[in-house]
Length: 208
Image (cartoon, rainbow, N blue to C red; front, side):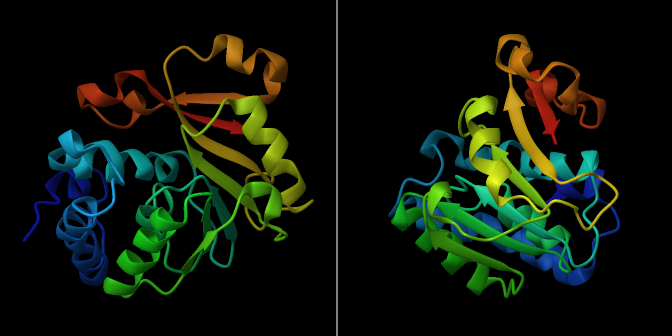
């Protein structure tokens, strides 16, 4: 059984089903990663800290409301969408990526753990015609490019306390990248929530 203690450290109120789903991720991603390079092979032992918990940093910033719809742009093999879909079973996730084999991994992993609230599609963001309450992403592209892609896919009024917008996981110095947004961009350090060294330079960025 995979050790999900780092997840339970910060999310202690998981149901037995959520624990089972998180525990299953390690072996599933290890197996798929041996066939398709979804995450760095040198990093598989850090799956829970560097990928699962990192994805769940979005949940420390904002808790999605039941019935909300979320688009994950550039999801790869399912980050941040799969960890978030496990944590928020009453929220609908659509995860897209331009690389079909990575979407195959996402859909196979979701199916294997019985995750019913996520669908993966082999699409570029420009091709998606849906409307969503929020867009999430994990270090896929510069924030101005991401927001430009995301805005046509956002509802005018979100189902939630937070306005419709983009919630992205970003690392490093963001000052030049976010200059064009002025005070519209909100940046929250993940080190405010997680004490591990990995998170010292990691942030959640929100732009509505």
